[in-house]
Length: 366
Image (cartoon, rainbow, N blue to C red; front, top):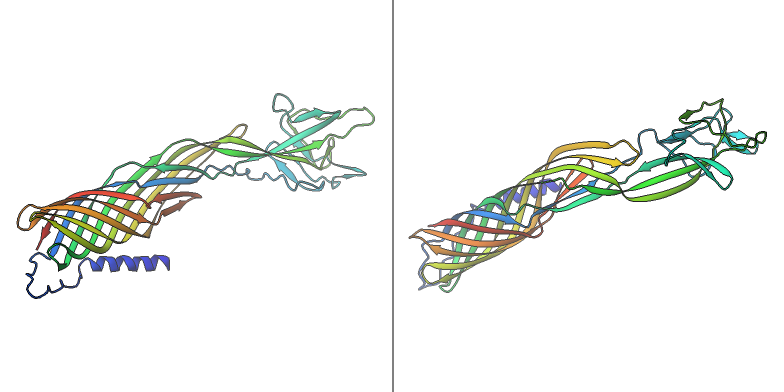
């Protein structure tokens, strides 16, 4: 329903361009204006429109990895570097909660999973992820170049000033790209499982890595985790490229007030309703890299469109070039709702709240 109502508003705005009421009849004794209609064509430069790329990064737990609940001894737990699962004996050995159905990857080096501390031995397993949600903000390329067509209908002439209605339609192609690297935080879950003491040998035996145990045979490993969760700030490196392009169509309607400057010039002030229709294309590729894990690469692309509501104020200086022709230059400030384009879990925000236009053109009066 939102798109239908906005499209209707755009049609109304377009219709107004060619259906203004006739000029107001001047008071008795006042000469009628000969040039109550004026068309203009202008080249416009657009400034202060930028793009934010959001929801970047993200490294979910790999498929199949599930460390399970933080407590309990009868659960299937799968990690990126091992597993601790429910064996044929349901992890119950009298007072000992342990399993034969376990495995791990590394037993040496700085990343060894075998931990000896305070007379005990543990095997540590990990599940690493990054929530993502990083942003790359304020991407802009000023100016963006376009054009505008205007129509003014004079409704009243008071010699020292005159007023009427102004309608306009403009178009500006817009495009930016971004390849700035980002960094996301990493969440690292670590579960330690105690290696049972063999009372006959007085040792805590761990098979050499990599080790993969079965449900009904092999050495035991405790099955209830000692869990810690840590955050590695900036541990996920996000690289890639993001491209956003849009066709921006502007429609505006409102009253204007004009002050003559001698016989050849005039200053015009106007303001009113603005509608901005955006049709956009968004594509991206990104790679998320975390130390010790395989890089994750993803991509996406698509198109979208929407109509945004806003308002404007403008000022122009114009001068006559002949009986009917003139030239003008001016500036316009426009504020409209931000435009959002979502694609494959990523989001682009086109900031339209503080748009500035600078224009120069010619007009024809009749």
